[in-house]
Length: 309
Image (cartoon, rainbow, N blue to C red; front, side):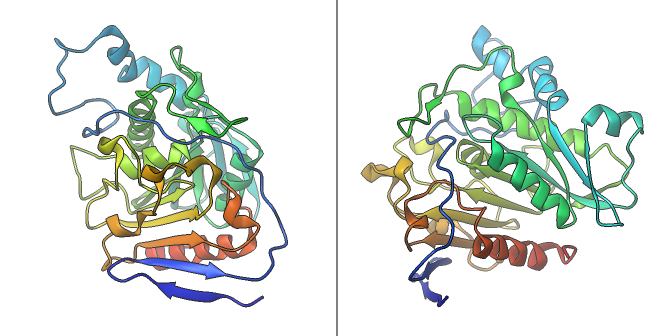
């Protein structure tokens, strides 16, 4: 299979063109969502929001109790030095019932707007097989979580505040992971698919904006939206970002979604935007299941962490 690479001027986009593709992937999860971008550390906000001005609904978004529900319902995968992968829970990690056998880098993985699906399990297992502890919070576990998309029609953005809830859930999980002695705190990765990719792109940390995260992986989100507060990437210049998107993704037909994340990236820190423009994958939303995409992810992680197999 031949592959051609094209570099966009002043961007870090690489397009892969091939004649045929073996596997066509599922097209699920979510598109657009979010509110104005604010700094998030998983527990507090900064900016023009204050306790006095927040509505009851907004307070639920940032509620520790609500975020704890997403943490308790998380999928967890732990690699072992013997090559096996342990399917466990955050409670078993916290209690010491399951203790990783060495220090591991950690991926916080954010699902799409349709919650956990077969692709979620594939991704977290793949990451664990490649040397990462993976924790995937379930935002659907919140007591208040309105529908945000309709995968049957490839439409999203039903509830604009979903994006901010997802960022809170991400920040809460990051802070919880940092409490574990076995977690390699210098190698924390935030990754997400579709709506989870939106949260990954827009997550910010007011306590330590240059730290906590080593890198980010965004799948199925072009970083372009009609809601300008969600335009681009909120990662600091120190964090490398890998973005994966198909140029004919059916979720992003409107003109305000056209483009990719490359123009928002730091071209000097290893960030890469991969735009798939070959059939049939160019028409898909989910990309990670394809072998060559996995190799792109593996190479990116190798370059960032030098820890992956």
